Amino acid sequence: MPSMLDAVVVGAGPNGLTAAVELARRGLSVEVFEAKDTIGGGARTEELTLPGFRHDPCSAVHPLGIGSPAFRGMPLDRYGLEWLHPELPMAHPFDDGTAAVLARSVSETAASFGPRDAGTYRRLVAPYLGKWDVLVRDFMSLPLTALPRDPLGLARFGLDGLPPYTWTMRRFRDDRARALLAGLVGHVIAPLNGLATSAVGLVFALAAHENGWPLPRGGSQSIADALAAYLRDLGGSVHTGFEVKRLDDLPPARAYVFDTSPTALARIAGLGRAYEGYRYGAGVFKIDYALDGPVPWTAAEPRRAGTVQIGPSSREIGAALSEASGGTAPRTPFLITAQPSLVDPSRAPDGKHVFWAYGHVPNGWDGDLTDAVERQIERFAPGFRDRVLARATAGPPQLAAHNANYVGGDIACGAARGLQLLLRPTLSLFPYATRHPSVFLCSSATPPGPGVHGMSGHNAAKAVWRSLRKADRK
Image 1 (spheres, one colour):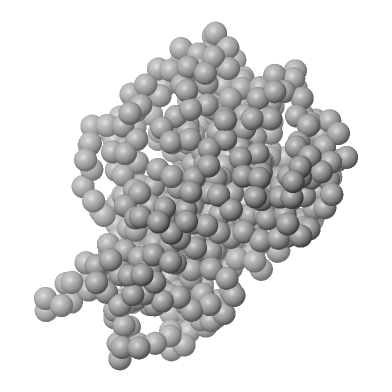
Image 2 (image 1 turned 60 degrees about the vertical axis):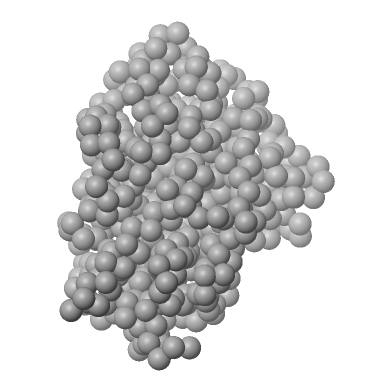
């Protein structure tokens, strides 16, 4: 080990590993320290129920992963990362036995909304089709990590995206489109009336049309494993089972980069009340299922979809999100579900399936949402409970124990609402830096926020590299 490393990264989630890779690619010496015995953070795969059933404890489907500028700039396929595409990225069933879809095809998606809203949807997405690479780089690299390649396009996206989704939904005449897009906003656990929630829905929709909503073969662990393998080839190293309680626990380094919550960073780095204004949002209650067969959806479309949103009306979705954010566990939760084994038979024994579902609950809630979740699933898939071989449940306390970044069960590592959706963790043009000149933050508590895309780590690595280069010139 060199007497002084260039950088130490704390936390081996996708952002920490991405930051480490980006620094190692620039020729810097880098080591990663992870408290758990396995790497991955929100991108892990484990046998949670029965032998042979491989589940993703957190993220399973990656709309922003396959199109991430950070991941696309790395040869992760050489290290085993393979994206698998379901026939439909997402389906959204309704009580009448039909479903709307988010398909790769804009026309197929628009047609599923019905004739009164098909044209409205096409007009909403048309300005951005074919421009994903430029748009997502500009959108996910802010602030001040790169100059926009398409300032006018980004400005137009801002005009469409900054209003609350409750404004945007008025464009549609029927609730099929409103409900599906409201569900997309719900992926960041934000009430529908929040600032820039329209941008959230639009980004997820465009991701499906441009790149799909794929799953990694073998589970989300494949993403973390590929990043770690690439890092090792670049000369970096990863240490697991190493809990960091203070900076003195780590080897000497010119920079310390934290893939942790702001709360943990402040405690470890002795930053006192630096992030006392940072707010954590609603938590989730998640259930992983081992099933005796596929989910018996009434509608045909969900049987072909990697992701299924369960919330039959925009009003019901909005109420569930508002209740969870306001401190009440919804009696009728909005659910996001995933069906990995539809496209990846290796995830379960022959003829069996893994299935994943979560609903939103108040931060820190310690109740049991199992019955409410399964009532909602049965509503659109009668006989579902008869297929259940085993289930593993995790509410906010269990999720926080599994991943310390999920404070109170908040899988977004901070409320994605209000100004905090855009400016996190503080109102600063330099969100990756801290008041300690050698300490940086790279978790999803920094822009562009939650999701397995590595861009927070990518952006933070740029800030670290610039800081070290500036110091070298002195």
